[in-house]
Length: 347
Image (cartoon, rainbow, N blue to C red):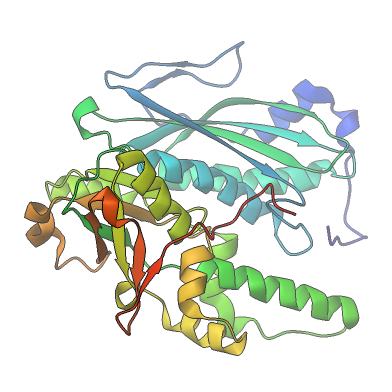
């Protein structure tokens, strides 16, 4: 972690666990009626009239993030986004989160306060309540575990398992930017190691860096779909790459999927930087990950409701399982889709 050696440092060992929790959570505000009791007791209390959707993700230093170029405030924000995205991928709305961290004494209090600034900002921006968590020591760097809780009417909850032959495959936003943002950061890290006096011009890559360092979960999509009177037949978020997520939908729904290369939405910046790195933009779209867009299927009858919306792109359709999963290239060739996304268990 790059640090200003002259900044003040307050050792967290001087506070103790309860003092640390009190310091980090003093900004917490409760905004949801479903939160009956938040931080301060043995457990939180929530009450909803609808089914709850619950998800947990863990971020581990050295595996999921590199503190040599990831600001702690951005990391805290992203940790919340990763989990909220899974709630929105169930066509639900998030209402509460818990945050647990394991941290070594190399992190002063000021660093953890910066981390929690991002956490509090994300909670405020997305209207969710921080209702609990835990803190403990770590001998292997920083570990963040977040649990998000949401709710939705049972009939409107969307799983991965509902796609049918003939459904349309729809993607929100554009993809590939987060992965290329990571490539920019890794390249500049290597340049910095070779020449610490080098001052890179990052302005041309601002969109890519924002998508990597400060992603935004698609809270707007469940609300938009409700306004359009569309309930997807299946849905998943794009955390591990388009190819992997398509295969998840295919397996869970017991169908095949046909994806069209020419329909995949790519920001012009992604295309330009892919050329700069001499990599294929379609490959990046298929394998990149961390876009936190939503991929879902709808019945063909719902197409007129979504066709004019700039947030949504039809990129393929569902076929019978016997046809398998294929990418149709711009030249008309059909290539089998294989899992190309990120895998944390690979070296």
